[in-house]
Length: 297
Image 1 (cartoon, rainbow, N blue to C red):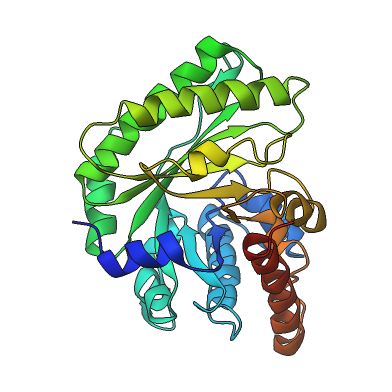
Image 2: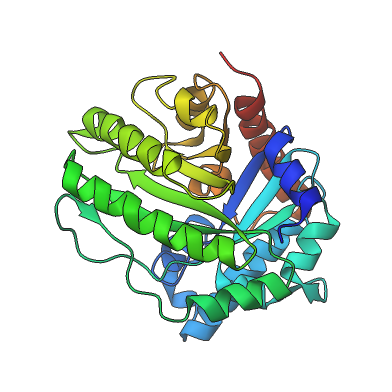
């Protein structure tokens, strides 16, 4: 059973979802962006300890609370860790922020213009653990590089199969078929993805809902039918490599879509900052992303 208070907050809240889910492969770049060079750690454990310190600093910042941040997506190690001596999902919930967990194990090599998710035989155990820790939902990512309908249909099929597994575990799936914003076929891929998602949503059994995490579309308003679909709890947008200013400008053109930014949220934060500098920088980013999520052009 899904937590109804968290469900209502995500469905109707005025804010955005922070993506704090950089995994093993992307952690070195995330740390470099934070001003921590690669030689600063001697092992994978030390690397993950450094990224957890960064995330803890974000979560405990005075501006990171439920006033403007509806939810936060965690990496599994972050979920398993603590913030201020409390399990991370609990620390988020106490700040009014709904916890999510990234569940995919990375992606396969590109085929038919897309990258499917790798097999995940341990998913049921991860979902049980997440549910026990008070996590509300999941996020699972695939990537679309070309406007290949066969490939895009395969991505959507796999995503919805995993989504049903997540729903069966009592969690909310955030389905993320990312369209590569650098693709020469981006506009066509957006259109095919919209068509395939609508088919999959219409075919869903029962009355469950899912969330969608999508790249900002080339055509403003393209995803309005998804925003309005009765089986969609919320449509959120990833920044996909856009700088924050550009990502926010594009987001503000799209009715009903809210942000779920990672790099665009964290791009100005540095570990060398004083606590006041850190809070001011993070607070400015939160204000800008919140405005783009709630005030539409």
